Length: 294
Ligand SMILES: O=C(O)CCC(=O)C(=O)O
Image (cartoon, rainbow, N blue to C red; front, top):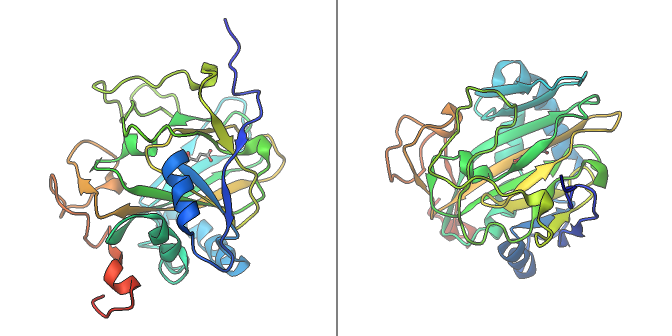
């Protein structure tokens, strides 16, 4: 058996931009367009990070629409993720709507409008060395037509290279969806779509350029939902957590296929625009230009 290549090699850096005092500019958008991922340093300040921390307990104890605990043999810590908590958790709601979050995302999307799709909290506690995240495309799980979802993933803890997300540069460009990867390894997996190609062996493909970045709390990775990414388990003796907000452009339409309930709303039918209570319209270009239509 040949050894995987990328698992042990040093990835190239993700292109990075300081957004402490400025929104993502043309070069940041170009990096996202070309590589499928971009790193926005200091996207969020300590006040925003505290707000997210304030909501975590409520999100994990019933405030989220979907909470998953992934159990890995030999791991003593908990690997949990939860989504769609903003409707219940006021602190998350404020972190999403009453902050620069929408402006950061809207600056990256080439779109006349932008909807909130969902929030996502991911925590790998100490003792989750086996909680690896397999190579996957977020879009493979979505009931959506079109290209134009950006995942804005902010580190809540320092994330060194050892536990950093990996991206396959440019893997979003063909806008081809592969099968959804199974995070937990259970047999009654709900996302299987056999009409899609199986995920290639990215770790053994020497031609695949892999990108990664070490993050400090408040640094954000923004990626196209067609980008392949993966992550190691948490080998550190402390928590590795992130909070992400996923935004949809005006190119996105609902696709009525089986999926998690958290990605659906009763008002949406095949081909409909996303706007509804659950996926609210948050920005329009007219509003961003200072007009009063929103
Ligand atoms: O951090 C990780 O382990 C995985 C994150 C991820 O794949 C996601 O948020 O889509």
